[in-house]
Image (cartoon, rainbow, N blue to C red; front, top):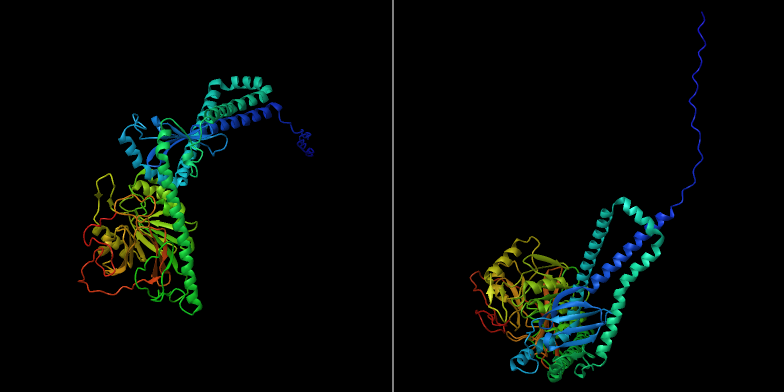
Length: 598
């Protein structure tokens, strides 16, 4: 029987091709919703920013006092000294912003015009206010930086609160209720947004009103003529403070003007003296002499009312050997003691000499207090851009002022070796804490510090080229092993020319502020101020020469010729350790006793 014909299974039918649907246009409601959310976010940001800026506050200093800084909206900077009254000046800030500086530490029962004790106390602050007026930019920058930081934190906090309230409201309403409200509010997006922006701008309107009221209040107040020609020109005085300003303000302004004129003349003298020295050096080049050589009969370049005297006989400085590597120029300053009047001169010498590194040997402040922040900020700002600033804190500095110095740009030595432009520098803070109003304390002897730093230098495989340490009494222990080739110090307020101690060379810089023992350095110089230039050869890793620059009490300037840095001569092991003042060229007094200088 024949097999039945196999019938093929029918092929699976292909699904019908559906025509592509046209893109669905976005629903107008969704666009409005996103627009509403974006505008609400903008309103929230503006509201948070207004809140953050107008409520910013910060703690800083003003002259010799702690002070609280608050942002205001009256276009006025007001310095409030409590019961004495206020000092008001027009604010340089935009958008009608101002500031209120509340000076703290003013007794509530102070009497501005009666009570000799009060007047004596205020007169005692005169020098500190003079110091503040000499360098007000540093205080303003510190306070502004603190206010900006506080405003940002407050803005961020306000945003967090607003976002939290937004999500809390969404959660409480629930999805159904939110959809219902969105549908009802969608047609009114423009009106709601305008209303929200109006709420934010109300603060601006109120501010404008307050500014107008402030202008009316101060229009009848006559600016004090005492401040003409000073940073406070145009200031208006209220309350009993006006009596003090009228009676004693002239003394402060006169002192301020004398201070400004003195350091302007000193800076001019320094620039002229440096130009004369360079001309004399170039003349020697033309005559075929070594460009940096100094003959024994070559006078020091001077400028100003009187000429200074040379520190001693001069000699041809050393020159780089081997490869023609460019020497590194370092500017040594020390014992500034908050004399911010010297800041422009430090800038001038650093720029004219081409110094790449500034070494601050410590005692940058006088008491290490927070109100001296403007001192370290001013000195840090005096260093030209691109120049490294390295410091070894002294006994009049503190952890607080040192941290402020570091924030302003200084590299603070802390017991380790650092590399600065190829030069390896070691140093640390002075273990002694000396305050004019506190007992002296010390947590480590200078012999122990010297031995510790010497051990660090000996253990360093790359070696140490220079140690920067404030007190020179560390020299005997530090330089004994030969691991430290050179020690640069300050503290004595009197210079000691480079001399060999043990197996190294010690140099003691005098005060760059002309400081006297335990006295704040404010106003015109009371003693000769000194700065020193060192040249270091990166090939031989040795200091080539040192060059002294002096500023006299009569605003004169002396630029001495460079002198060769002495070479270390091997000495017998039994040689007695030397103390400050024991070397043949030493000029400080005190011998082996504790130095009396600050």
